[in-house]
Image (cartoon, rainbow, N blue to C red):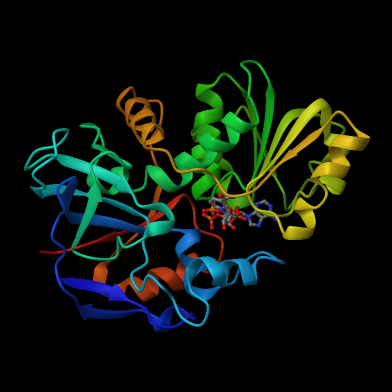
Length: 324
Ligand SMILES: NC(=O)c1ccc[n+]([C@@H]2O[C@H](COP(=O)([O-])OP(=O)(O)OC[C@H]3O[C@@H](n4cnc5c(N)ncnc54)[C@H](OP(=O)(O)O)[C@@H]3O)[C@@H](O)[C@H]2O)c1
């Protein structure tokens, strides 16, 4: 089968189209024929090892010290079940599915095996393969942070970086959970963020949300520009900063924030859960969650897609389509 392989960390040029053996499902696995995968900010970080300050060594330990341990990137896919292992009972041949391999990656390929009880779910009938492929990365991240931050109905939520992969999911999920949502983005994305349901949108090129006197129960930072010292006065008493993007020095402030105030910082990697995928699929089916698709690229032009994602300015998701 065809796969996009990288054998060293670096710029998008390290990605190469290669022939690799087609995987064979084990007893508890399904073999998925992939129609669409995505390029996420996670793929960019693991490819380049351009990670937030303090995380470089940890990243090498996780992903491979001198070269990538898993040579095939890609965390999201949508496709069709081509074959199943002998113990599989939840899926059958021809099922249309989407899946999230998370840190295990391996979705930049024509086929991928996944254990049936991991993050694989039936594709919502009302979503295209492109939309289904883009359900998981931003969706599971936002969901996990809102769960850890105990978001309550009626709370005021500000999402900094509301137009990105995580931000567009966070706006929609915060609305679903009954939040009063303010999105922060650049001028070009104001209408997009409003269309996702945000009651208020702040253009960060014109207004600094930390200086307008407004306060929030929850602030989500996906852009890395809202560390605790900058935003603490914009949090209400018992407010929570959900630091999706933060450096190691930012994380070292967690105990200090708890000791000196009623406010809390929640940070660290999001947890990958199979049931979150099924939750997102149900929400999508009910019309309450729809991944935003920015650009589409054919599989052979994936390096070009990475160049775009590397800018840190994508709107929602970038999808990659595969031919068979
Ligand atoms: N903790 C975790 O488990 C976890 C999970 C997923 C992702 N992440 C991290 O979270 C970050 C965001 O991920 P993503 O997939 O959403 O990235 P993305 O799709 O590239 O989006 C980044 C967004 O940041 C916005 N932005 C840039 N500068 C900004 C500023 N000064 N103020 C407000 N917004 C600004 C951009 O919007 P404009 O073009 O409008 O500026 C862009 O839409 C990444 O760094 C990723 O590594 C962490």
